[in-house]
Image (cartoon, rainbow, N blue to C red; front, side, top):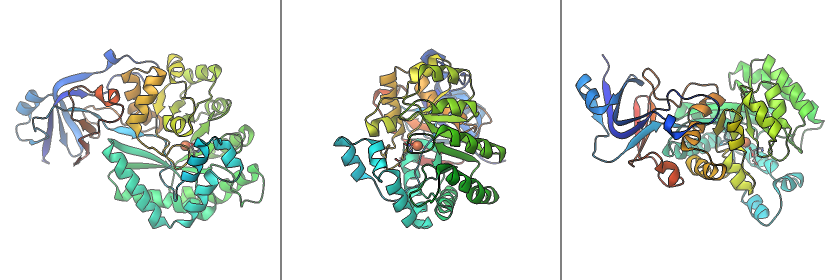
Length: 412
Ligand code: NIG
Ligand code: FE
């Protein structure tokens, strides 16, 4: 019989169990077990409940974290939208933006994403692995144990594959779960000789078959925006990728409305950004299975309005929150800080904000996770506080003291 570990006692154990996938949530709906413990065996939750009961039921268990500190535990967080595989930096863009140039103007004058493409093409696969691992480690210390990572700074056969291999190899070296997404359709690269439609055809014919064969990604993304791809070509691309079995997600409505309708019509697993989503699309989200992913780090990075999360939730949408961590629009990468600021601005309950970075983020990736129940994979994060609400009240300044993943525990 393999060994058991009893973690706790926790003043509060927040399970996120029994909550609806879509729509508004009240804090009173949260299941909070007081003076609680969690028993782990073989990387799974064997039992959870009252600490003193668990101590009696599992007397043979090894005890961890019973150090008299006031602590709470909750499911570890999921960052369902990032671009953490990149080379170089965009501090020049940043200084131009704060001096008044817009993101789209910088892109139109040849900077922006193209700049990171140049730097990422220069980086070796090993270098990219190292950069991803460093960023994944920072995220683990923030309580995040699942990270979606996009390609999209290679934009040719060789460099898109290099990025996807780097994500796959980094995944083997970090305890954090990395989920890769093919974003060859980020923009049409400067050196591609042909139309936007022809570039997407090139991706479908030359790059996607290798991704399928080498099992490098089962998800694909496209940036639908002025200066990136228009709705007509994006629709054809999405339909083709769906036929090949990909889950589709899209960057939409970041600067102009419209793209989210396409994402919903094409049955995307998620539609992300949504800063300019209109009322009609908010209603459509409520009637669809497409998760609306807010990216407050991009609003903060570009000094722009937030995604209308309150309206989306009140229309019964499933709303997730992610960092969009990337060198251009969202260089911060701190999920709880960003979620706290979004929540304060959009008037989200703490339950809605927490759902957005746990089980609703899992839904955006179509994975299990973000809930603590018997039989589930063990993945929880511990904060030294007596009240879980302090995570957002302190606007990200309260950091986790430990994260447990399967058999491993990490103390910070
Ligand atoms: O999610 N909007 C498109 N793509 C990324 C930004 C990438 C970049 O600026 O490097 C985003 O904001
Ligand atoms: Fe993004």
